[in-house]
Image 1 (spheres, helix red, strand yellow):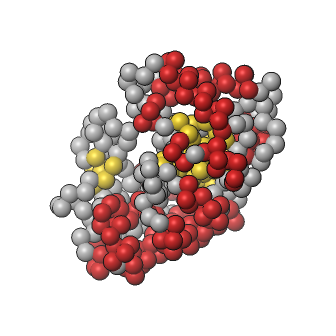
Image 2: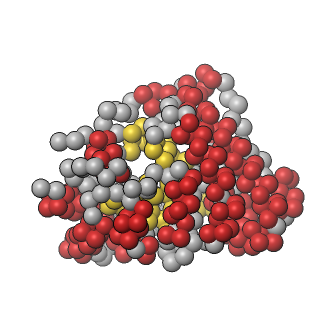
Amino acid sequence: MLTIKQNLLETIKGGNPDRFVNQYEYLGFINGGNPYAVRNLRPDMGAPDRVNAWGVTYSFPVGTPGPFPVHKPDTILCKDITKWRDYIKAPKLDYPDSEWLEYKHFADEIDTNEVFSTYFIAPGIFEQLHNFQGVDGALINLYEEPEYTQEIIDFLVDWELEYAEKLCKFYHPEAIFHHDDWGSYRSSFMSPEMFKEFLVPAYKKIYGYYKEHGVQLIVHHSDSYAANLVEDMIDIGIDIWQGAASTNNNPELIKKYGSKISIMGDLDNSVLDKGDITREEIAQIVRHSCESCGTKYFIPCLIRGLSGSTYPGVYEAVSEEIDKMSKEMFK
């Protein structure tokens, strides 16, 4: 029997996996934080709103999948993009080496014989744009103020490259799980042409740096439709797209691009993550996904970012049904 890590590599390389990679099992997240992360806190579920290290106000109401930025007139951070430098201040990263090393034991505790030591990074570049301005403001300014938008993107890339240097120097992650939602359930937020203009150069620098400094896997999260961006995902160095909604026609994507990028998802939270869903319905949906997408270049997974589900027991039930499909489809 292959280790979890070996099985993942066989799956994404089109080799001979002996079972489905079960959701997030291959990612050993380095939890516990670092000098920046412990100062960049967001609210717990049901707790009062909180302002993070960037100055963005976050809310986390009970019953929602996670915290999100509050975009009200009095909470939008960047009220005039032409004066963005007056509003957007990057959190410091120049803490002493000794402070970064205080958190190294969390990385050392990961069994890298079995799983990939993984750093989770969020929000991504586009998410930061709309965190600062609101979604409408960010999208409008891509058209109306492209020069100022590009200035902010460059500013964010420079900051993340400095952050990446710290992570690679002190924690040596083998994988990066990087958040940046690029679409809704039905379409991407921007055209492929605009994506290529603004985000491809940014992520080539970011993901290129990680790959050049020991990171083996880039797992990018966008729980959405983004089939029209897959060729650019390959170009910027993404190994696994996590969050691929079923609206992408994932079996066709796998057939066309499987040797270049793997698909992790196809199990939509909007369909599965419900309080009244039955075990039989979960089993049927998981079966359809596994049979349609196949055993190579595919990781069946709920499309939301990170393990877990809004309704208790759904994530675990999906994992159990994936194991059942492994026993049936890998003989």
